[in-house]
Image (cartoon, rainbow, N blue to C red):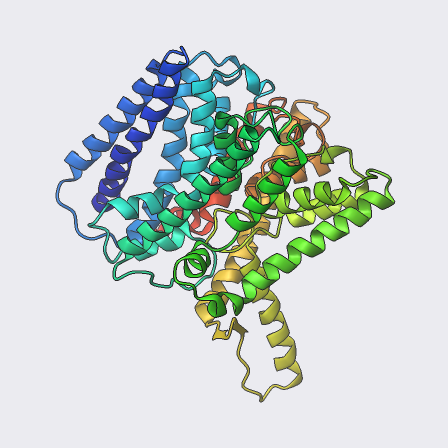
Amino acid sequence: MRTALGVVGTLFAWLALAFAAPAVVALVTGEPPWPFLVAGLAVAVTGLTLRRLTGPRSPLGTREGFLVVVAVWLLVPAFGALPFLLGDVPELDRPADAYFEAMSGFTATGATVLTDVEALGPGMLFWRQLTHWLGGAGIIVLALAVLPRLRIGGRALLRSELPGPVEMESLGATIRETARRLWKVYLAVTATGVLVLAALGWAGLDRRMSLFNAFSYATSAVALGGFAPHADSARGLAPVTQWVLCALMVVAGVNLLRLYRLAVLRQIRAVARDEELRLYLALLVVSASVLAVELLADGMMGGPGDVRHAAFQAVSVMTTTGLATLDWSAWGVLATLTLLALMFVGACAGSASGSVKVVRHLVLYRFARHELEQAVHPDAVLTVRVSGRTVDGAMLRSALLFALLYVLALALGTFGLALDAEARTADTGVFTALGAAAACLGNVGPAFGELGPFGSYAPLGEPSKVILSALMLLGRIEIVPLAVVLHRGYWRA
């Protein structure tokens, strides 16, 4: 316990530095910087106090790693909500609303309770987008890059922040060096996105794309988050900008380890053999094509922009980003069900994406095929293989456990939202409740109806917002760490 609290304290001490950036933006634009300075001071004092109280600590182990992950993702949004509560943000002046917005930001979900995003000052907008960027790659990865004492236990934390049943490949002599290189990849993709989007504005191809908007949309796309500085998400952007954002989301949905091996180590063959990556790209093409056909059949679109809108929405939902160029709440039944199905896919393991992840679907499919073949040939020695590697029993159990817990969390979340709507005599139907639960648990963000891409979660009651905040947390940490920490055997050990 003392070791875990010490790591959390060290992490908070570093996180406090992040509040300086929005304070500078606020100061330059004439906005009061004190909400960010006070919040940063509170985080720093908490972190340094925890470090001082815990004293010398042993190396972090896997058991303590679970507690660190849960504590970080519970407490960081609470501190991240402080600027909203201290600042002049009328729509975020209640703790439940402010925590919901901060949780949505740090978990890269993109759900919002704001109905007038443009009313926020530049400093608040910057902080809102920065929570996406910090949460996208993960505060844990950042901690691994700057905390040299996380030796053996660092691998457990990196697994938690590069989620999914993916084998950890060493990119350096130490886990610290691996985390640093992953952070550099994330930073490079972000910088490239900002420069390309800003260049579109400088060239006059998209007059709406200022440097601030370029930063906002790039961080949202790279973190696979969904927050935007405008209420119409990506609808008002130029077609070329929408294509750039689409490409940026596709790249951000790839395993960071694979991006490093491709861009830096030039291991093209190793990347080409990655079955998850091939399936990920194939699913994007197929889902975009299916959406385009469905929208054309329903008469929802007609013109040269059909392919762009279908591709953008398919990529955005499947990668759990949540940006939108059209209001998919007005689409027909088939297109709506297609988007709902995409919410359960996700991008590659080892990316900032939420949801189930492509590799888990692949593992579960191979396992189901293995069991059917084993039933036909009971004496045969068969193995489950992905990308040429044998999937061991531990990984299969992990995938099955996650799928079971995911469905259970979705069902309980939907039930809770429906009960709250019934208690408030609200018009929230079962499908809307299911869409909201799926969108938040999968870290997609926007759902359907009034909770769609150009809507807001503001009409929901506080119990529903608490439930959805919990679902966002579960989706981000992939359920298992919290289930382990809540198990009685964890505290008896």
